[in-house]
Image (tube, rainbow, N blue to C red; front, side):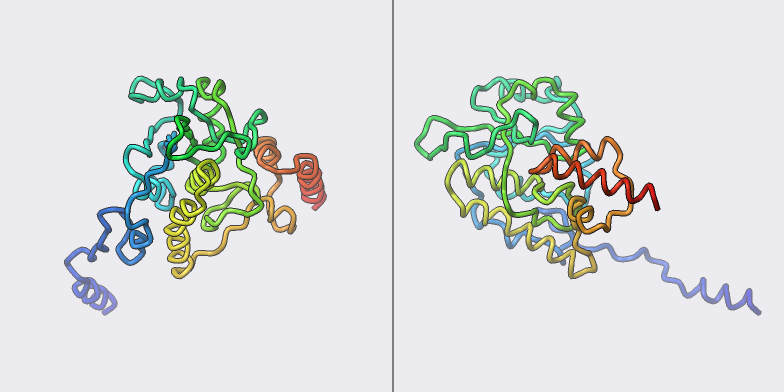
Length: 268
């Protein structure tokens, strides 16, 4: 009898495969969570060019911010290269960009100066920065930087902002770390003195996060925040510790927090 019921249940299963969700042809996201109506009505044409060095794994992530940049900026002001070491023979045109005196790496190395120290640009100025950004997780970005010696000779800048990341559906190492999109938006707004550019670029990001929250996603606090609140559950290893210290605004203060955190966990 049980076998008969089982076979009846199997016979009642639908023969056709489940209906696939409609996908937006632009952002490649399901139509129900498409953010394209929040993109600028016309593509932005900044003075500076965004040059993205993207880790291959980042392209496969369902929630990444490079897509917004590619849809919001004109094609001549946004260029993307993929790999784990740059430049390579497949990266056509990148060698020339990296050799340009107007090229700047936006990455918080120990030699990086504050973004605000760079000369500003205008629509009529001859100075037009190539802003190189590394797109990936922080460990992936560090790997790319270490393997790409051509990046080491570039002028390096960092962004100091009192506001944390709005991309709260992914975890940041520290409170002042920004997503790739936020970094590009901040750099363009500051260097070109156009705050509206930042607003226009971040509007789709806000919508994307809101969609995720409406479907059950939770806010991801930074690891720094969780350490301060004593809610981070693991020991901080050497690699993560160095990353946290290098991306924190107060290295000595953060070193103390990490040491106390590991001490407490080791005793428990």
